[in-house]
Image (cartoon, rainbow, N blue to C red; front, side, top):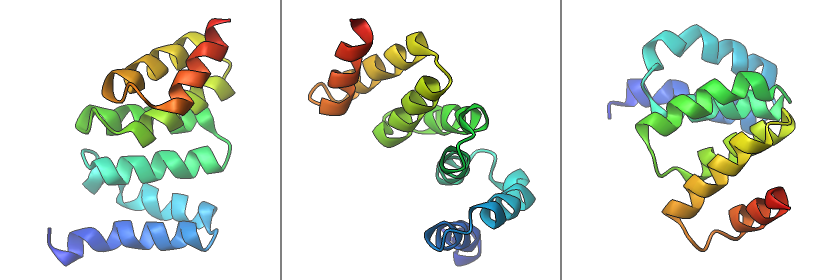
Length: 118
């Protein structure tokens, strides 16, 4: 991957590390057109929205990221938590089941699924 392509994502990550979430979001939106099919970029943008407690805006990014990397447990877990924040228990259950298909020993997904099934 050429350095010039990786740089914007690095810049986003550094902004997040510094706690510059609003600025990172603005920067991410400004380059989004170039990265609409980039798993890492989509995950980063979803994470920023999630950190800013905007789960409804985070979900589409996590969903698109997962289409490019089906076995991304971290994205699936964040998607699960976003659904829970939106009080969408059934969607969270489906995410947990998807995680457990990938990693049957994933404790957090297993515990959450048990809790949601009560």
